[in-house]
Every structure is written in C-alpha cells, then in structure tokens.
Length: 223
Ligand code: C5P
Image (tube, rainbow, N blue to C red; front, side):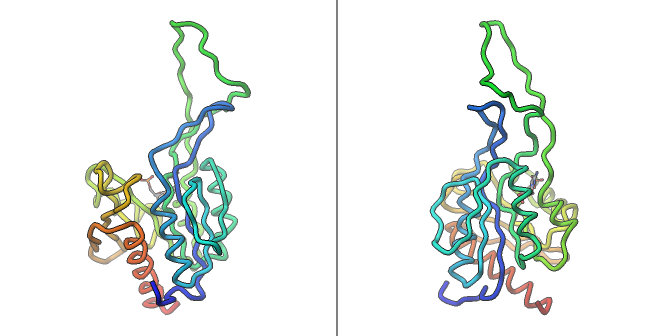
C-alpha cells in the first residue's frame, strides 16, 4: 500500500510452523509455510510500521524487518513475550505445535530390529496466544484459527477463550486456501461484531485488508 497507515505503530508477528525436537536429527512439525505471517510483516513494514517478525520460516522478508529466528514453541513463546510490552499490534499467525516430545534424546534414536515399536510421549506446549491474552495491557491482539470443519464455531470460541481482539478464521484442507497456498480466503471475527468475510485473494492482499481493519479498530478505540 502507498499510504503509510501504520506509521508510528509497533507490530509484532509470529510466522511458520514450530519444530519440536525428538533427537539430534529429527523433529515434529506441521504444514505451515509461514507465508501468511511473512506477508503480514512485509505489508506492515510497507505501511510504515516498525516490525518484529518471530519466525520458523525462511520466506523472503523486506529489509528493515527485525527478524527473530526461532524453532520450537518454547523459543517462540520466549521471543513473543520479550517483545510484547513494546508492541501495539500483535498477530499470532504461526502454527504452534500443541505438543512436544517429553524428552529430547541426546543421541539419534536407533531402530533395534524389525519387531521394534516406538511410543512417543508428548507433553503440552504453552498456548502463546492465550498467555499474551492474559497479559494484555494495551495491545491489539490477533490470532488465527485454521479448521477443516465448524470453522466459525471454533474460531468464535478461540476469540473469547484466548482474549483476542480479532481472530482470522481460515478454512484449511483446500488447495486455494490455508497452508502453503499462495492465496487465502478468511473471515475476520471480532467481539460483538458480525463476522466479516474477505474474498479469495493473494496472501499479500489479505494481509493488507487485515492490517487496515486492525488500524480502524485502534482508531475507533482512540489509540
Ligand atoms: O487453538 P488453536 O491452535 O487452533 O489456536 C490457533 C491460534 O492460537 C493461532 O493464532 C496460534 O498461533 C495460537 N496458538 C498459540 N500457542 C499454541 C497453540 C496455538 O499461540 N500452543
């Protein structure tokens, strides 16, 4: 966008799927490419914001973005918490693993014989968005909800449970939207407002619409 509608705002964004280590050569992860979060960071910078991007992904970013590379959910939680106080707008676009291996093996896990079975014990990761929601002071906090079914129902639950100011609801499991696609179609949910659908467009165009809507909300609050 030519218009610097985010001038003076500090924007903190997370992107990508977290990697939860199992042993020195293996990890558990998910299908998130980091494209939506990276598009949000690039559009926010172009719109005049100061941008911190906490990411597991290796997508191209504009020079001028403060990139914090992380891998696991625990590292992402630490980085988001460290930058939270200074942020005006916070968007958790990352796909954070709900679970991580309870123990990380010091050495590569070996297959002993053809009969061997392996059971992985997983423990829960922190819910970063919920933690940020509980610690909110002045930030406008945005989460994503990717679902294959009952999208608006689950997304509305997340809005309230995690104390977010907006949830970007995202139908996944189709070629044109969600994980790894170049385009996206989402619905924006805010407390006490009608759901606002955004039509299928590039992730960059969707990012611009999301950020403009956030800025409108901040201005409506008088911030
Ligand atoms: O509950 P669910 O994982 O569907 O919620 C998605 C939203 O919550 C996303 O914004 C995601 O970044 C965030 N999340 C998180 N920490 C987790 C799980 C999800 O911040 N452990």
